[in-house]
Amino acid sequence: MNPHELLGLDNAAFERVADHLQTRRFEEIKYQFLPDYHRQLERGTVLTGQTAVRGFPKVPRTLMLEGGIARHFEDEIYVEEKLNGYNTRIARIDGVTYGILRSGRICPFTTWYARDRLDLEDIFDAYPEQVLCGEMIGPDNPYTPHSYPGVESLEFRAFDVRHRESGVPMAVTTRRTVLEAHAIPQVEHLATVSPTDGHEIVAKVIEDLDQTGREGIIMKSPCGTKQLKYTTSSANQGDLAFAFSLPFDYGQAFMFRRLIREGFQSVEFDDDAARRERATSLGEAILTSMTDAIEAVDAGERLAEDHAVTAPPAVVDDLLNHLREMGLRLDIVEDVSQVSERHVNFRKIVQSSNDKIDHYLDGAIVKE
Ligand code: ATP
Ligand code: MG
Image (cartoon, rainbow, N blue to C red):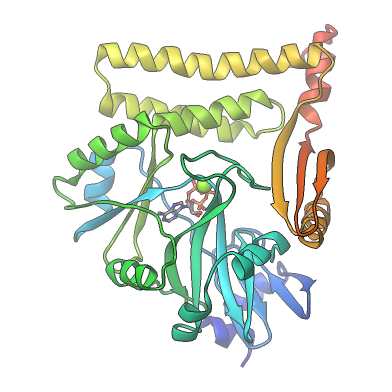
């Protein structure tokens, strides 16, 4: 079958993205993936031999719960927790399991985790053409570290099961039952609500998640095809604090979008006192992370993103190579090897924030 037939696209549509596919090897396979967004095909789609794995679709966001929910959904809505980690698709291709990143790159570390730490034989025997989608969370995370109570190192939480080639999701209740039956850890189901008055319950859910510093929710239609995301203030402000701790390395759009989310959330949620409180904590999130960064550079420190991983030595080697291939500069801070495990603390070096802060501290003129 041609790739376009495999994906159910007409040839002309496929031809429009074909030039944007990149080719890589991983172990025994050669594969192509689509690293950027295109109208014709989901970002992160993978093609290899007679198999395709569609990218996980972009999840739309609402800035207002009441209006967004009423507009987006017709039937009941399943509210699941949105976890803050990195998106992973796990697929079995010609009998071999692979861990795929959002971009479509096969990741050696995620692949090792899927093969070694998860027990997926039964689910893939029962559903060989499905891809298991989920979030890798926890502190020992080479991409998006975030701490969760009870998550000591790195864990997987499934949030979707989709047909590899078509991307059609399994219905939410079926998926939850199937995952449960196969003992695969999954995201929490927090509530089931209706489109007309669901927003009040959802607002309460968000307030509870916010209290415990959790990221937010993804609302889903029963068939799983419609998704809508919404995040807590602590996630918005946490992202802002992080972005302003590396102020010249994060796109300004990243920061602006989170400020806008806070504005709309304040209008929907806050009375006067709550708004003042939000203003203070938002200001602190931005300012103190930025002043900490400036003072750190002033004191001669280098700003960077810190990560830790623990895995078999060969897997850590492959991961570090994979990250370098993706263009990252790494500094290994700590490297402890035991027989079967190697623990590495490393820093992803950021350039612009260090250089610009240094420059401005020196009194360089700002061009604006
Ligand atoms: P996108 O919206 O394209 O995914 P993004 O990187 O900005 O882009 P997020 O804002 O983190 O993504 O929101 C969507 C992501 O949330 C999903 O891609 C998925 O990795 C993650 N996620 C966490 N929990 C869930 C869940 N319960 N259901 C679906 N996705 C979830
Ligand atoms: Mg995320």
